[in-house]
Length: 491
Image (tube, rainbow, N blue to C red; front, side, top):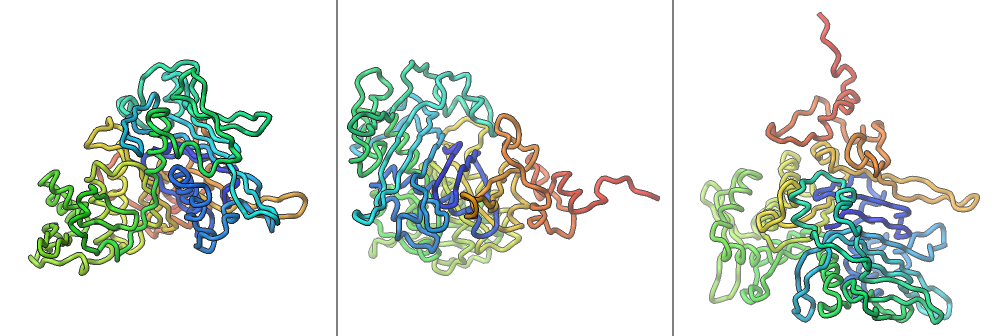
């Protein structure tokens, strides 16, 4: 779970410091930096799994292509920033395995990863990226201080279920950087032990040290890597969602891919693990869409194919290829909700796309249900999952819990005396947890919020049982939309 991300020098993200909760919605106009924040998260995830250049090439540039890696660096005019830096605070799994299948157990689960990359670009050499600093350490040594780093609302039971209570010694480093006479050295410590660390010359590294750790040397680093590998951008494509799966896919314990692939195989696997899965997901879809009686996956033994089927209330059974895009998106997200193996961070751009406006509140509630409930301990029924969405839709912003909402806008800065450039600036609503000490995040002006709240009538909560206040329910918002709000009635 990603709890905080600081970015500097990546695209238009300059001096950005964002805190995340289990569910976060980032709202802003097109082109202000919402997708760049997702790209920064994806880039860190790719760096935990791939060589530097390959990780850079999978991230799109401003034109939607992964071509010139210089476009990942912040640019003012024709000049690129020499460095980009990342600092990610995260909660990692307590246990897992490395690439060789060896078990790993973390010494601590609340960690901070820091990375500085330098752009190498000269007329004589190809453009490349070099690591100049890499670090992984505990967020804090003292367990009693941990609540001061997790500012979003959560219970003591939840916190204790995800953060170990092990007492740590003086050495809290797993990866560290040290300048030496022959160059900068990245040191891999043997899981925080006082023994001699393993040194690597930074200028020769084709990939991060974190990406090659093994359980025998650094189990905590392995699990930090596993956490970062789980950060993914979900881009559900109708063609992938409609596709049948070959039976042999089941041998790999399939999960829904980032494009929606293997939906049929995932549902079939879930149903084999729990025979009530089909009925649970059908009931979820019935609540969301109405016209759903049953969900099933047909196994064709001759063709060795798995095909998703849905039966409506009239008794008509339809294959996945005949279902609407919105229905398939709902179905994929419902499957993720019931898949306890689907952990980690899910980023989703513009969840309102392809959804009827009346179904948007239901879609948002489903996304919140996918995220871990921070009031309950983490267990199989409440897996450690996180959801971050972005949007420019007023219909979405109005329905989001106020504490989950972040805004991003363009801000103009000046380099030197005359060179003007724009960066992304993030803000929150006043009187929410991000706006209070010690975070004191910048708050959005209500005038800037008005574009998202063009509602002709006073909003009402859709679910009377909900304890979360929506943006439209705030008194200051209602006073902005309806100046007479709260005034006593005159005879």
